[in-house]
Length: 148
Image 1: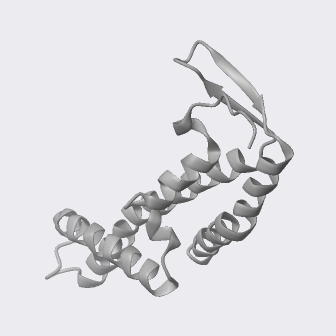
Image 2: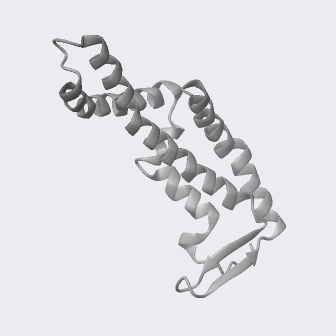
């Protein structure tokens, strides 16, 4: 393997592995059933927060229909935030893995450098995108399209 001047934590493969092992970001890697279970859990938590707030504007004993619709709708806000954060983070990793040239910082924001990936690393990274990251992004995009 060739010399890589990019610090370990800024190498795209290591960024991918860190995201893959993170408790938050690995939700998106779970089976459909597990992933949807987590998303329903996030929505229910949003509902627990939204319902009391909504009740102040739409008293359930007077306006039950309005209360239910507004509570359910408002509960989707945290869900959208979670999905958006998952998507943007995995998209960033996908972009870093696919790039031929990697930007990195040796010791701070003021000393940015560029490193050209050797062909073998570029091929490996693009295979990871194709077989691991892209299906995940497609799943998140599919969920986004289904709820718009």
